Image (tube, rainbow, N blue to C red; front, side, top):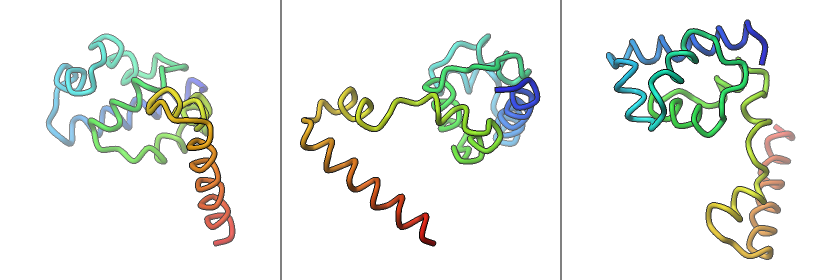
Length: 115
């Protein structure tokens, strides 16, 4: 992520936090991230934030993940694990179950591309 993107992301997070009347410490606690880390993100000092932490902050603030992805030009989504890795780690699914999920996701993606 570029310095400009990091700065835009920081402004978005700070604005969302302030509009909800939350302190940095409150959001850090809600998202289970370190206060200094969150403070640096808001100041635009991180060009490579950990996607899993950033996702928790976004969720805590109610920000649409697609908005963050647009600001970062896909940096966040490209840093996330693939669907196979995610479902295997998160849910301990079998290869057959993962294949069903992957097929379903591909079908949904095709429908969106056709629209």
